[in-house]
Image (cartoon, rainbow, N blue to C red; front, side, top):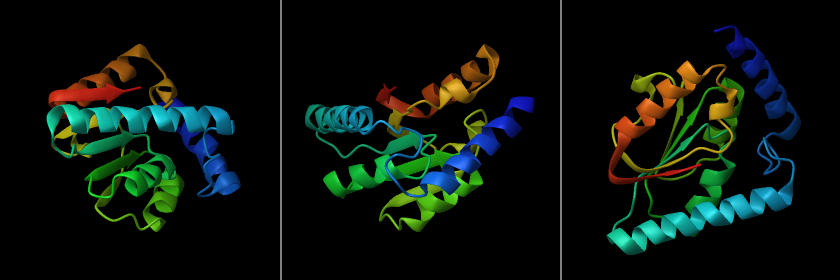
Length: 154
């Protein structure tokens, strides 16, 4: 997986440059704001429709920014973040988010996923996989960890 080294180097530089900033992986604050609002709206709709607190996985969670916003808005949600880049994973962990488990792992490997979640969020992470075969592996893992009725937010 030769692309892995390129991706790791790229996101190591992002971690150094942006740290815990909301601009990490998305420098356009307007796009970041509207993406975040959409995710929050979808989570709230799920809560309303199913009358439960969903378990949420942010796949490729980067520095944990989105999970920190979700945590502020809905403090009782069980949250998970899966991040491939060790430097971004460390930044996410340092946020100290309650009821949040961060996993340093690979979305292509099923054993790196939590057992079952109700919502999977992925923002610009599947594009980092070098081939359709690798993307398909990740998508299969996503479908297998989603509950019924689960929701994938891309």
